[in-house]
Amino acid sequence: MIYYAMALYPEARTFIRQMGLKKCVEETHMQIFENENTSLILTGVGEVQAAAAVSYLFARRPPLEQDLLINVGICGSAQQPQGTCYLCNKIVQQTTGRTFYPDILLRHPFEEATLTTCPTVIKDGARETALLDMEAAGIYQAGQMFLQPHQMTFLKIVSDAADGSRLSKQQVEQLVERHASVIIAWSKQAQVCLARQQSELFSSGEYRAIETIAAEHGLTLTQWRQMQQLLRYYKLEHGDIGALLKELPGRMESGKQEGKHYLEQLRKRIL
Image: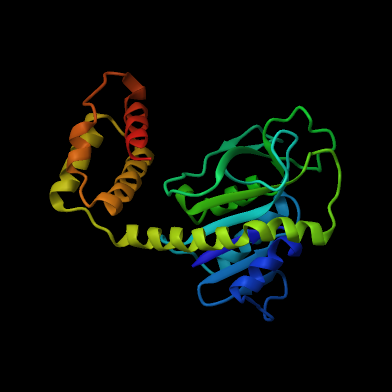
């Protein structure tokens, strides 16, 4: 299942039409549109509403390990060109300073950028270097209660210069429509890849090698899971991880940072 979370109907209208989604009339608290393989919810504007909507969606329709959550919406930026679609590799919550990092383990056709989630519309964002939105941090925090970081993707389309200007509903729809087909096609491919990852099992010899490396480099449980995801992705493309593991360096004697440094080397080699 692919879950889409979008703040407003003009952002979602093209997706609803292209995928043939039907409104769930039995849902009286939230607007949800679905077909057999896709569920799209309109979250409303702001972190709290967005987090509540995603929590409601997943409570009613619990996701599986191969499912994908995609937040698509417009954003402001004084630095980036209008109409460009970005995949967000870092999300900053302006009110708390907290940062969140969706794991980007799958190839994609989008440019990457940092996104800051703000509590109100920014009217003087000329000095801001990041993209600006009002929902992503809330969606991430709600989503992580049900999903792993690699199951969440945030795609933002620059609509204005973060100067307080407002677009009409038609202008918003036209901006999103330029990218909808690419987003839908990539989302389907990504979901298929996640499903294949879940069914792909390492051989007993590969598991032993992975366990030995994890112990040698002192990987934490979170780092162990990240390493498995990276190696699953590599095996799907190449069919064997033995040669890759031999290429990577042995213990680097970097103390508490040993596991982190090893994962960095592994990520650079694979992605």
